[in-house]
Length: 425
Length: 102
Image: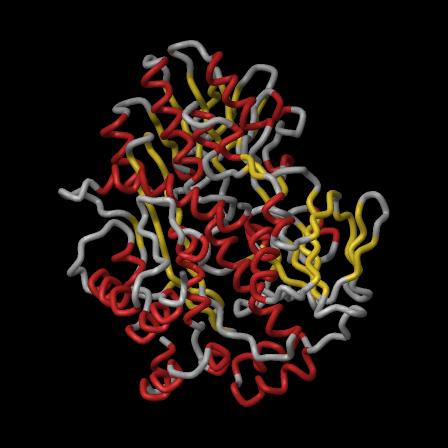
């Protein structure tokens, strides 16, 4: 069915037939059994919207932790104007929505036999599987870096203990020290994230350790909201942040935790605090299940986010190759709704609607200075996911009487409340 | 984009049909598009503020606001950029669904 699904979906006449051939043998006594791996932005949204769209579905959400700590707003924990508790979300709301939340680590998937194996040996059968594992950090992508090295040079690119470690290091940093951030090449989780991080770190340093400097060593020559970030750095923290692009030698060659040194084409730089964000790939279970391409990410049908590698499997969020959509919480939330609708339709033997896709990424430069980028997307079997022309884009370059930066700072906070309520409340 | 493939008259006829009929249209359903609004405007359009709550807004109001954002007659921060991503027909479909939220 893999080769015919795309053409079927795009052909109105054939769509009616999809129900017959697309209908799997359902697990006994249920409207359909769906297992979701991962309770982050993508997975939890999918689970929730599956139940919203069809309360009779049997939905099991597998998650290794008792709660989810969001990467969005974790930069504000690093900068000290949010607490880790503010970005930690339990699963009671998901349970109340009728979702079975199972604590465990998915270690294997039998896509032919349609079952997921957990670390304790439990097997969960499914009619449809949603894989939303987020990212795995590729420590080996930076010579000298490792999981152990991250205890000295944090990545803080998965929110939790690493976030708090980076916060503690920043608090202990002497005035006049250098904070170094090493940013990865594309693609990676949260494209504006490293630039937001140096912004709010600069805000903290300006107010507490004003003699300090920030050096950003980047594998790339361009980045998300670049013009807005660089203008803000100049106006809010003049002279504090230096960004070195890849072509100017910013790509890190190696790191040495013992001497707290980063080697790049720019030279050997020693930092008081060094934040290394390594390259990334789809979460481990996606690799174990054979859902990744050579790139390390999961190719999908752009119309339904069905895996291009296995039947009855869908990929949501950072792990998916989603064309023009960035790896963001908003993208994952929107994709989760697409997958939920697709699964509900497929299980009911109905044609699948075209996906509604959109992304919004707010970033704070300071608690009172917000900027955004947004896009609306179109999906087609032949062109994949592309941005809708003449729409979207970044915040206005020059603020007007509207006071856009302040307003967008308020909207950033509201966005977080809204999206987290949509997912975990 | 989708309106180019389907005559506007056909889409217009589909709006008056129940939601289930949206499965037959080429573009995303009003419900599917509206649910993406929740990213900022909150689940079922219930926002904690200051982003405007959508629940309880009448259809005509939503269509008018979205159209004014789309044509830059109403100043805004992000909605102008977002509204430009939808056809007039899609805006009506979104508003039809939003108007059902209590």
